[in-house]
Length: 194
Image (cartoon, rainbow, N blue to C red; front, side, top):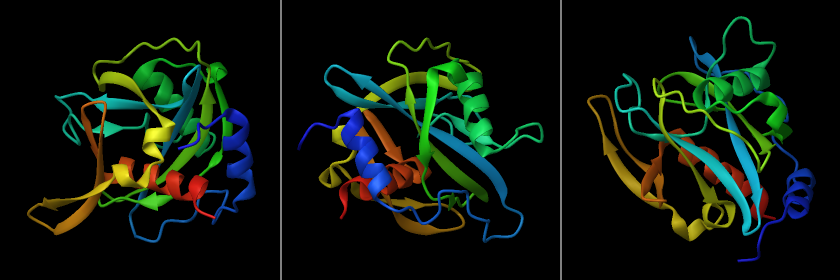
């Protein structure tokens, strides 16, 4: 697969129309707004994506891989501000180290969140400070790997309330599934499909 550069990514992102550049309205009642940051870091060996592993003691989604982000607070100016605030709270990266590229279409989760993913460059010299109350680990995965469709598989999940197949991938010895895998597939489809 051809290596992704900043220029190639920006051109491909801008050439492809999004369903909506702005967050769409929730379709489910009682849905809460949330935002995540898809942080892209340019390294000598290509572009990498920032991911976190949630802390083990969390009540919701412990040990799961996710993007930095969370629910919108009343003081947030907008959902992008939510993504920046949560990124700083979780992994210590300051807004000054982040440059917005744009948004991907919002999606709804089974936990009734309406999540808007924001794509942004993060300085390759970023400094992180992991908030261990929320995050166990911060790691990077090469974008090339995440954009390869063959790296994804269907994973059966069963709870008291439902049973279905979800998309998942193994990266850096972590299982990535749920809304994080959905967002990665959305990014993959946006950047690689004609």
